[in-house]
Image 1 (cartoon, chains in turn green, orange):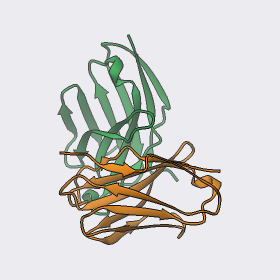
Image 2 (image 1 turned 120 degrees about the vertical axis):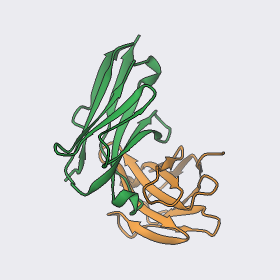
Image 3 (image 1 turned 90 degrees about the vertical axis):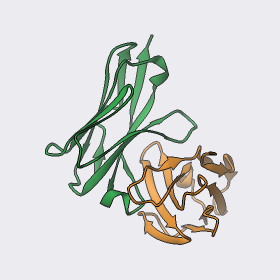
Image 4 (image 1 turned 180 degrees about the vertical axis):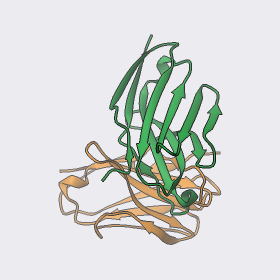
Length: 114
Length: 113
């Protein structure tokens, strides 16, 4: 049973517009969430994270929102750029990451068109 | 600061063989986690090492094993390779592995024929 779900396998957005990537989770014990970006044949690159004690975290063009009651988080990219085209993974951990493992969603492929 | 490095980057083996993959974490990082990425299953956690001890293990058979050295470098071994072991193997390091972000290496692409 998937504990972290990214229900949209792909998303296409025009350059300059907002990209919204969504992620749902089932395990209420998750307390640390991360977003990674991945290009083919490369390892995931860390983008942004959020602790369960917060509901929003911003870093430049990237903002992550956490809705604990709905067990939902989203990544907003504003404005979207062609270089943002990649696969985006949502990940979660239990106990503040104390178990040393991350549970990943299956990813959403973002295409930003010029 | 140098990132996480993994060697080799590509590997071709045949069924029944064994393979050893290597990972050097970011300097100062003591936690190393290993993941397997396949098209069907996505990224799945294999195990995590901290100070030469395995602290956590994912749901993989005993053919998958690992170890960590005193300099925090880690190796992963897969014995009796199967076709389904073909995957991208990623390692990630973090400072303590407790609440910190994990930083990934480029991965080792293993093809089992």
